Length: 320
Image (cartoon, rainbow, N blue to C red; front, side):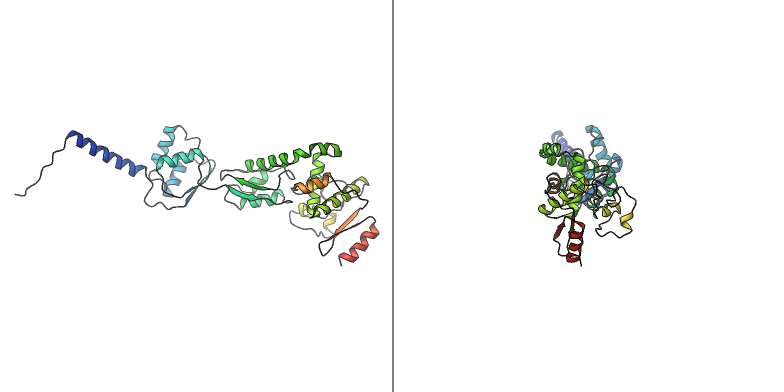
């Protein structure tokens, strides 16, 4: 008959083995799956339910058991406080750390860097935002920025991956308020409202490139307003037709729009872009000039005239 060795375990040894087995089972249940891939990203969208989020993470091999993740979050009392956004998992993490990251908004991603240039419109800014990893569509940004054209300050921003359209617009508007605050006394002394200054600055931003030219253009446009002359600014047509155009056709000049500065005198009803600080300061401190006309020659240089006859001469010299 075969010989079988009999091993006798003490209660203490049995308890230790049981604890080891329990630990191994728990580790296996709560550890990341073997199929986890470093660099995995998961997008948690607004309105997504906890079961759906847990399943997303399981499908992406971030957690083994979605039911355990749901239980951990519900037991913590934070299941309704999950942060939306894109999460990046660079290394395998246990279920409890994954749960913590969802609650804390620890995305594992650097902030999104966006630079908006001077003269960009809300539409252009929306397209730029939508092209990033942020979960914001162009339509969402345009909706959030309604009525804010001219007041979204062009600058470099760093947005958290969880940023939504409203928070992005709010940050840009707050930056405008900060930048404009030192000019408040000058604006009051100018006799113009902030809205008029910003609208004029938006025209100047589109029409001129250097500080000196911006101040000259601002001086000329304010002169034309004082004399009751139409501004005849070509840049408005890019805003009217929602495209980048500075060479309107004869038909364009007759378009029925309150922004048409050929058919309507005075400033347009609002800004046509978001001007930078230099253009705002030019609108606030225009050059003192008697000129009433300007044009940009084929060489990119601006030329000024006091009379229409002089302006026609400039057209002949610099545009043909």
